[in-house]
Amino acid sequence: MSITERVIGIIAEQAVLERSDVSMDSTLEDLGIDSLGLVESIFAIEEEFDISIPFNANAPQESDFDISSVASIVAGIEKLVKDQS
Image 1 (cartoon, helix red, strand yellow):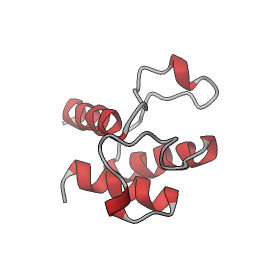
Image 2 (spheres, one colour):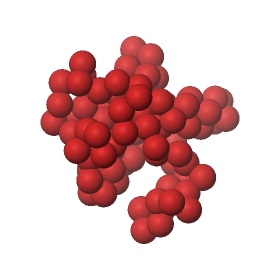
Image 3 (cartoon, helix red, strand yellow):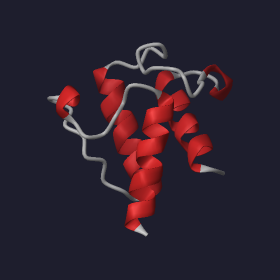
Image 4 (spheres, one colour):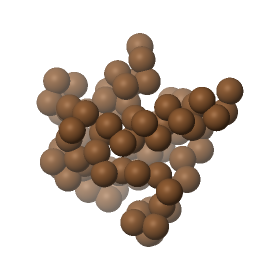
Protein backbone atom coordinates (compact mmCIF):
# COMPACT_ATOMS: atom_id res chain seq x y z
CA MET A 1 0.00 0.00 0.00
CA SER A 2 1.16 3.51 -0.78
CA ILE A 3 1.65 6.22 1.83
CA THR A 4 -1.53 7.90 0.56
CA GLU A 5 -3.60 4.73 0.91
CA ARG A 6 -2.23 4.06 4.39
CA VAL A 7 -2.92 7.63 5.57
CA ILE A 8 -6.45 7.59 4.13
CA GLY A 9 -7.05 4.28 5.91
CA ILE A 10 -5.92 5.70 9.24
CA ILE A 11 -7.97 8.88 8.84
CA ALA A 12 -11.05 6.92 7.74
CA GLU A 13 -10.70 4.65 10.76
CA GLN A 14 -10.39 7.60 13.15
CA ALA A 15 -13.42 9.31 11.56
CA VAL A 16 -15.40 6.04 11.50
CA LEU A 17 -15.90 6.41 7.76
CA GLU A 18 -15.40 4.26 4.70
CA ARG A 19 -12.10 4.83 2.89
CA SER A 20 -14.09 5.98 -0.13
CA ASP A 21 -15.55 8.84 1.96
CA VAL A 22 -12.06 10.34 2.43
CA SER A 23 -10.68 12.36 -0.48
CA MET A 24 -7.40 14.19 -0.83
CA ASP A 25 -9.32 17.49 -0.75
CA SER A 26 -11.12 16.63 2.50
CA THR A 27 -10.35 18.67 5.58
CA LEU A 28 -10.39 17.04 9.00
CA GLU A 29 -13.36 19.25 9.81
CA ASP A 30 -15.19 17.95 6.70
CA LEU A 31 -14.62 14.43 8.01
CA GLY A 32 -15.87 15.24 11.50
CA ILE A 33 -12.49 14.75 13.16
CA ASP A 34 -12.25 16.82 16.33
CA SER A 35 -9.11 17.72 18.29
CA LEU A 36 -9.05 14.37 20.11
CA GLY A 37 -9.49 12.53 16.81
CA LEU A 38 -6.67 14.60 15.34
CA VAL A 39 -4.31 13.64 18.16
CA GLU A 40 -5.30 9.97 17.82
CA SER A 41 -4.74 10.18 14.05
CA ILE A 42 -1.30 11.73 14.56
CA PHE A 43 -0.34 8.97 17.02
CA ALA A 44 -1.61 6.26 14.64
CA ILE A 45 0.30 7.78 11.71
CA GLU A 46 3.50 8.08 13.76
CA GLU A 47 3.19 4.43 14.76
CA GLU A 48 2.37 3.24 11.22
CA PHE A 49 5.35 5.01 9.63
CA ASP A 50 7.75 5.00 12.60
CA ILE A 51 8.14 8.77 12.39
CA SER A 52 7.76 11.72 14.73
CA ILE A 53 5.40 14.42 13.49
CA PRO A 54 6.32 17.96 14.59
CA PHE A 55 2.87 18.79 15.88
CA ASN A 56 1.80 20.58 19.04
CA ALA A 57 -1.79 19.65 19.91
CA ASN A 58 -2.01 22.65 22.23
CA ALA A 59 -1.15 25.05 19.40
CA PRO A 60 -1.91 23.34 16.06
CA GLN A 61 -1.83 26.65 14.18
CA GLU A 62 1.83 27.11 15.22
CA SER A 63 2.93 23.72 13.91
CA ASP A 64 5.22 23.32 10.92
CA PHE A 65 3.11 20.29 9.96
CA ASP A 66 0.21 21.32 7.69
CA ILE A 67 -3.07 19.62 8.66
CA SER A 68 -5.31 21.74 6.44
CA SER A 69 -6.31 18.78 4.21
CA VAL A 70 -5.69 15.10 3.68
CA ALA A 71 -3.40 16.01 0.76
CA SER A 72 -1.26 18.28 2.95
CA ILE A 73 -1.03 15.59 5.64
CA VAL A 74 0.07 13.02 3.04
CA ALA A 75 2.65 15.45 1.62
CA GLY A 76 4.04 16.12 5.10
CA ILE A 77 4.29 12.41 5.88
CA GLU A 78 5.96 11.67 2.54
CA LYS A 79 8.58 14.33 3.36
CA LEU A 80 9.16 12.99 6.88
CA VAL A 81 9.50 9.41 5.61
CA LYS A 82 11.91 10.53 2.87
CA ASP A 83 13.99 12.60 5.32
CA GLN A 84 14.17 9.64 7.69
CA SER A 85 15.67 7.29 5.08
